[in-house]
Length: 399
Ligand code: ATP
Ligand code: MG
Image (cartoon, rainbow, N blue to C red; front, side, top):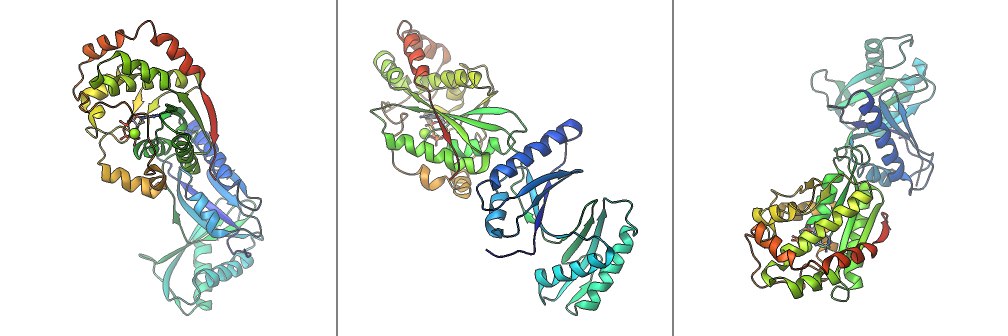
C-alpha cells in the first residue's frame, strides 16, 4: 500500500424521484451502507454527508483497488469519483494542486480537456467561469500534451470549492445503481441452494430492500453440507446487502406427512404452499413486508401460471418474483456476475428434489389442492407449530 493522490471519493447517486424527507433518508441509508462496506478494510474511512453530497474521506495509506471494489458493491451509488483534496483553498494553491493532479492522473498522454467548476462557497472571491478560465490557461502553460475542447472534451476536470476544502476530480467509475439497502423496508427471501433464489434476493435488495431469508431443510434427507451451501450463498449476497439473518426451518415432518397423506403428483405444490405459509409467518414476526422467491414462469412444473396462482393464494403478503419473466440463461449470467453461480451448482440435494413425483401436476386446480390439504387436518397443525419452533437464526456476514 502506498500514499495515494486520491484522498477522497465523491459519491454520485441517482436522485430522480427522491425529494424532501425521502432524500435525507436515502442519503443516510447510503452513508450507513458505505460505512458497512468499508468497515472491514484497513484504515479509518470517514463517510460524510454535506449539503446534498456524500463523500468518503480516506486514511493516508489505504488500498485504492480494494476500496473502489467495495464501493462498487454498494447499491445506490451510480458513480465513484476519486478526488484530490485541496485543503488550502486559496486560488494559487488550487492552481498548483490541479497541476499536480493532472500530472499524476494523466502523465504525458495527449488529450483534450475542459475545466468545470462548482462553487458551494458563494463568498469565494472568484466566480466559477473565472476559475475555469484561469485554471484552464494555467494547465495549458504546463502541459504541451493538453488542448482544450469545449464541446467534446476527453477529460472533464472538475473543481469544487466548498466551505472547508476544494477538490479536483475528473474520473467517474460506474457504480451498481439501485437504491441503498435500508431505504425501502424489509422482505423475506425464500432461499434455496439453487441458482435462482440468490439472484432474486440480490435484485430486490438492489431496490433498497433489506433482506432476511428462510431456508427449509429436511434432515436426514438433506445434509449439513446442503445447509452450509445456503449459508455460503447468503454470505455472498451479504457482500451487497450487508449481514443477512437466515432462518433455518426443519421441514422434514411436514414433508413426510404430506407424502403419507396426499396424492403424490401434488406433493411439490402442497409442499410449496406450506413453505410460503411458514415464510409468511416468519416475515410477519420479523417486520418483513413481502416475500421474495426465485420463481420464473414455466421453468418447472411447480412454476406454471396455475401453480404460481396456487402457491400465491396461501399468503396475504405480496410475493415478489423478480425473475418471473427471465430466461434461465439470463439468470445464470446474473448469478455469475454477482458471484453466486459456482456455489449454486455444487451438487447437494434440496428438499424439493426428494419425494418428488415422476409426473407432478402442471395445472393444479385450487379446489382440488385444497381438498387434498384438508386431509392433513388434525396432524398438520402440531407439525406446523413444531416446525416454527425449530427456527434457527444464523447471521450471515460477507467474508
Ligand atoms: P432455485 O434455483 O431458487 O432453487 P428452482 O428453479 O430450483 O429455484 P424450485 O425448486 O421450484 O425452483 O423453487 C422455487 C422457489 O421456491 C425458489 O426460487 C425459492 O425461492 C423457493 N424454495 C425452493 N426450495 C426452497 C427451500 N428448500 N428453502 C427455501 N426456499 C425454497
Ligand atoms: Mg430449487
